[in-house]
Image (cartoon, rainbow, N blue to C red; front, side):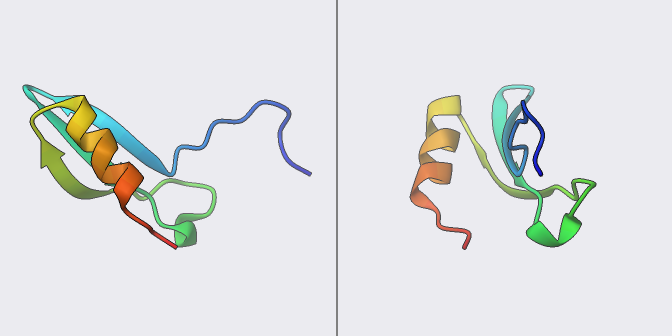
Length: 57
């Protein structure tokens, strides 16, 4: 059974100062996120483009 309303927090883009940081929590983290930085980008659009072009499977 899964929650009625849930949000996938596996991958996030967070702003730190003037950079946008892409972080990902591996599947092995299970119930608690264990975020690891994947990259820093000058714009949110570039960070989201990176996530869209990367296959984590």
